[in-house]
Length: 476
Image 1 (spheres, rainbow, N blue to C red):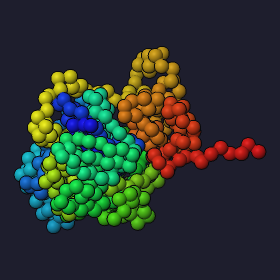
Image 2: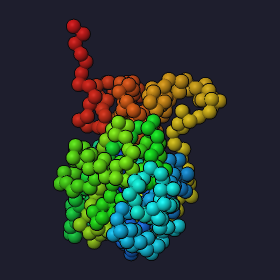
Image 3: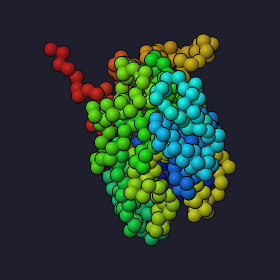
Image 4: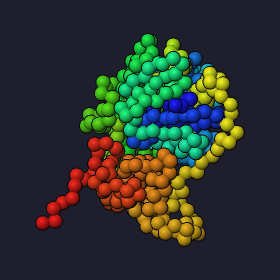
């Protein structure tokens, strides 16, 4: 029995859980995967959008601007990386220059601060690597970049510190109403609550349609990306956009918070809710469009590629609020700019639910949480003290990112903690470097097996059906 059940542990679900823990209530988060941030929240651009492109008057516009304004404070409280680097939208034709003016006007109406239109010369002076064919640009200084999965993990850790329960490997197969309660049925167990909050990402329509008469439809929209080695240096200090369209904000080139460069995404609708495979055609499209923005991009610097799915809803705006079923609350169709909106949406939802349930404020709420210390960034004195207290910090496991055994063990021991190689990667960056786990995979897997007390062959890359090894070789 819970007061509140949240379905989905992406950035929205974890942010809502943390904000709701400001009130006295029993909160349970159900997640079908074995960790947080396993869906859209782990595979996106990491852009905290300024809010100039969302249509005026929409929920997207409102919560984008509000969320953007909150991000620096939230990142400081929860100790995850965020940089307000600014963004440039480039125009290459006279028609596109006209469209920049429309974007500028729309941004002003939305309440975006410090927008300005740049000439070709001003744009090139600001970012010398952009194409010389540019005719003008829109500058949005309030745009930023964040670690999307790191933000999700930080929200989750904060929620757990404030006594939110997380249940993993809990796929929801039905939601039914029973008197004044809602029953959430998973493959293994039933859960009862007074309120159910649907934060299921690309599956939010499936969850809604289990119980709500008013059906919705989500079409997963796949975006493919390329990631460049940070050793290649940054090609831009701003996020560089093409003009947005009705279906996408367009391919971009952006710095990432850890010094890599990201190129992408594409925007292709798919009917497969688990289709995160990259394709030759998609990656070629992303790269070609990226070269139009920054011609000096070096493909030899690409160290990996990935794809993510956005929850595109038939109605272009978000669905946020109580449904016609008492106690059932929807956060559906939260596609881009979902990351940017998360802090503000979480506050809105927490207020709605606290009023509905008449919850009392939690005077013992823990405001701040500290991330796992990055050993490579400590001073020599701090490193020595860390090793003195815990010799595991002297053992560097991932050479590319200089990640220590101490950091990996802490990532496993935290709540919620890493349970597979990707979970370690998202929390410590072990395996994120140029060799992409070629050197450290077996060493990280051995630490996971030891700390989780499981056989080595049960360690997975990302949960069920992703074993690294299938058994022991015959010594003969």
